[in-house]
Image (cartoon, rainbow, N blue to C red; front, side, top):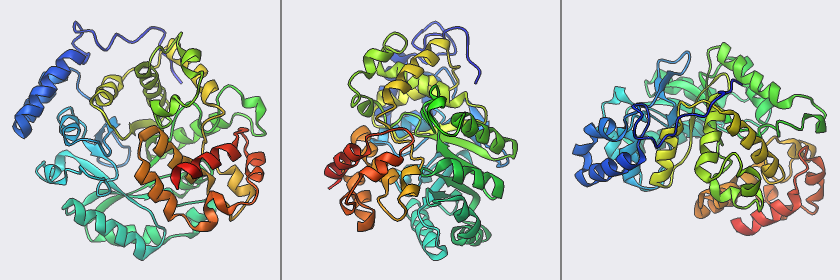
Length: 414
């Protein structure tokens, strides 16, 4: 990964034509919000001197912003993101309120790109999920049909074709254009199989310095250079013309980092505050060869500014040093969703999903959503179904205290 030898220019410098002035951004954003929709046309030039960089998602015809929009906490955030040039939106049709689909219907359809997630590998169910999202948005077509973390193994990619058939049918009807996939569980194996299948136009995967392992303790694991292999797969996908977008860039964000008692002290020399940590993580992800863009849910105006400021920056030496300290601190607190513990205990607790739901609960404050996800799991997959969680802990290649983490998650989510 290429690293810049010098610090990136201070993003808050009002003297740089390429920078976003936080003060000017806030001032003009407030004016835009007060003016309503009519004020949006001028917001991009007034509030954001720096244009969001765009990139063509490989073999697709979609030229998208490097920051991908997702569900936001306030209607004004959607408005400001659109005005700032965010033109690709994830999980369209699945957003909780406030979900301003009426605002999106007023846009020139050719000016934005959207995907929706499909949580089933069964043909009829996949069609039902997609059609429901399409109806909710009021659109005639959703660009991306994204199979969302449904594959458990490489074999599933080869044999479970129901969702693929659903996509093909919907594409013939003109309701979608591109087959996509996002993957949380057993990511490396499934990702590699998806690349080899050459079925998918865009794939979204976790990209951060701890995935799929802590990148400076390779000697502790039976498979050497595991992260190098993962990053190599990203480049392989890119070389095959597959668009690669990143998720889980922030490891569930600052509230989740605060759960690690000594994290701030360990990184403070290089990354003195939450904003600098977030910026470094964005730079790290976007400087991985093959990664073209990333997405994240946003909850505050400051988060939107931070993301817009960071896009396009190079990873500095200090940021890289700080992220090594950050990864050391997070090492025993973050599930990489590799699936090793579940493969060692087939048919048992859905560890990766449960700890992901716990991340939504703690990091995003999405308590009701996280609880709903947990409630939807079969009883056999829940924490209280296991007589002994120690079997999972012993199988974890990262040495995570899974017994403690899963019991805490169960209390949160019930």
